Image 1 (spheres, rainbow over the protein chains, first blue to last red):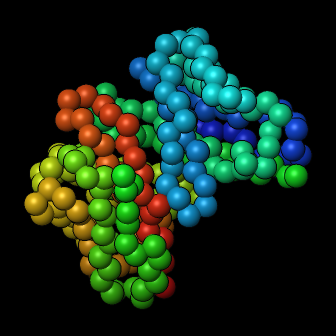
Image 2: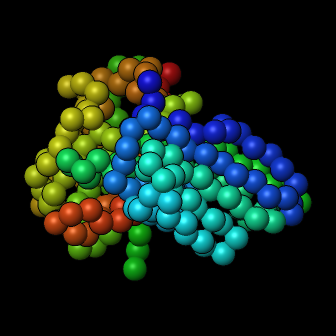
Amino acid sequence: TQLLEQSPQFLSIQEGENLTVYCNSSSVFSSLQWYRQEPGEGPVLLVTVVTGGEVKKLKRLTFQFGDARKDSSLHITAAQPGDTGLYLCAVIMDSNYQLIWGAGTKLIIKP
Amino acid sequence: EAGVTQFPSHSVIEKGQTVTLRCDPISGHDNLYWYRRVMGKEIKFLLHFVKESKQDESGMPNNRFLAERTGGTYSTLKVQPAELEDSGVYFCASSQTLAGWDEQFFGPGTRLTVL
């Protein structure tokens, strides 16, 4: 059983559309991170959210941490082909700082 | 500044052979992590070095895996003998701070295929 469940697993939409992907768990976390991974590269950190209900914006990307700090969402407005990639959520274990990962959402934005 | 580099980018070997993966962290980063992603599954932690010492190797799957970081610079991960289930992408990451959590910077990964 995965600690972090990401949905959908795969999403293919047209350029200009909006989308939301989710990262859910039954556990409470002190913080949660979102990464983007492109083919042939490693994950790159996009944002860290630490407060329940927190909303962070990164250009057209909006990240929200659930009030109970069990889940998070990533919303992309007016998606562009450059947003194509694998979006991963992860949490930091307080005991040893290792990252626990979701399986990711593979996003394709068609021109 | 150079990022985390990994070598080779791809490796195809037969079951029973030995493979050694190398990771060069960002210069000055004391923390070095190894992770693995098996196809269709999530990325999983393997181990964590602080300088040359193994801080946490709780994620190492079995004794066929040996990681070293002599001199606290680059690290190697050796799989001997390789099994089919070892196939996947092996990522290395490094971070700077010794106290608390610091952003981990990832290398491009080594794709290992065991036939």
